[in-house]
Image 1 (cartoon, rainbow, N blue to C red):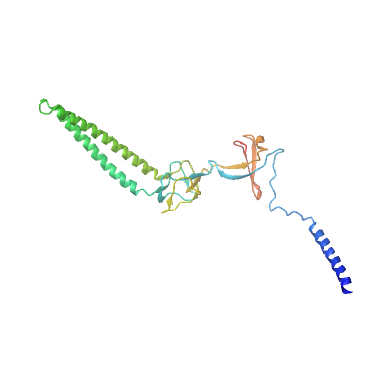
Image 2 (cartoon, rainbow, N blue to C red):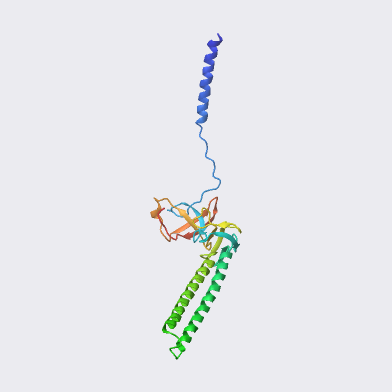
Length: 249
């Protein structure tokens, strides 16, 4: 008797529960209000896109051409630099020691040239040709040529070392501001393309906005067209300017 009534009742309850679940699931969920109202374009026709604020020179990743330990840092985040200002220096003690040796070698080479030149001049000033043989005069003339060649080599070596010494100090390529500083004293600075630049530099006067435009609308963007940008999250903060250039994305 109980089974005769219980099973149909449970079936009816299950059907009712299923119908209630379906009805509940089909309710229209009202959209959540935006955190901030989107910006409204002041033009009748326009092309919109999201963008980022960046330096007018774009971000310049500063590296070093010679690997080594960082011995000096001349800037910090936010520092404004002129083109040619030093940013950091790689340990230059070994290069300076080599430079001192080559400077001494240059002095020896100069003295050797003077000595060889004087000996040749003395040989050529003798009136009695029997005092020195022709071979001796030729030997002294050759000695002058060799000494001059060694002097030129010493000067070239010295110039190369001076150039390497200058390369150990990394300098700013343009006027700008230090945006990131990822190098520290005593840290080994590597050469080549790094995942994280040692220093990020850029010209921030003025700042520029780079906007990504859909390729289907790129043809509508013309250089010199008026443009307006607003800050994401606050459309009241906005600036107007003109487009510098356009290129399909």
